[in-house]
Length: 219
Image (cartoon, rainbow, N blue to C red):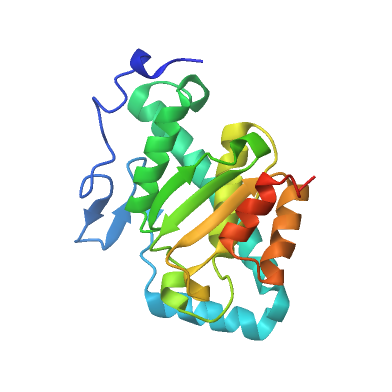
């Protein structure tokens, strides 16, 4: 494992605002640094997607969005891996974890998904907490009295699974759509996230969930 000082991580920084994406006004095309065509999604489309899924899928909406997010996250990591090799002439596995965290946070914001940070205070319990401010889905959907950022949960699960080298899952425990200040996600094994999901459905608040985790109620 390389240490941070081994690489001038941001001596070459392609992740600057206004520089990461290229816009061809003549052709009406936005591309990423590796040439992937990007699409800007209007809020009305997100609202339409939310309403359509609720009507067609009902309670299965959560599962559908999570699966879409997981697929999205896997494709995102493939593109990020290509960018890493192009920018730094190294595979992702050769770079320190700090690098991945910094790049992920920057690219996450550049994509318009919100401001991402991680809290490692539950890592001794086998869980990682991700906090997203201005999350793209719940910010648009608004307060509907339940968690809605299942697509983001799927994206986070895919990304962390790739970085950890093993299958991980994610569940949202706080959400703007429930009236919380920001969105919080817990990432861990499937067995643990299923228990966390049941606690969320019971109406437990984040503080109650964290206290239960500290008491080893997850088993």
